[in-house]
Length: 77
Image (cartoon, rainbow, N blue to C red; front, side, top):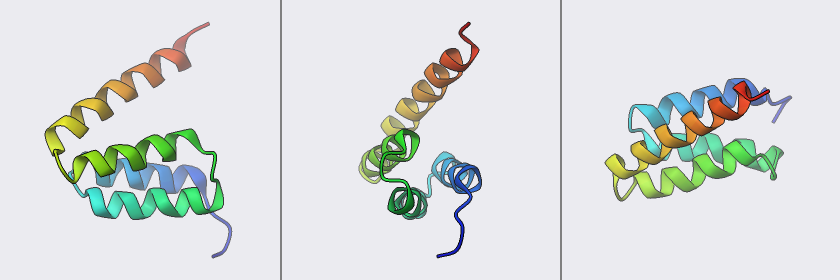
């Protein structure tokens, strides 16, 4: 694989996840983790995809909660 654009893949995975395409999102998160095994957003995304394949509603709620926490941390002084 050529040079991996982390942000592009992460945005694609999050978009796939948000519309319930958990298997596709898992593949995209997997591509990220192959190149960047310690990437925390990709790890969490992969875990949430696994949950989503069993319970989409629960996974979406956890994903939303994670996004809120992430934004709050970014906005913190």
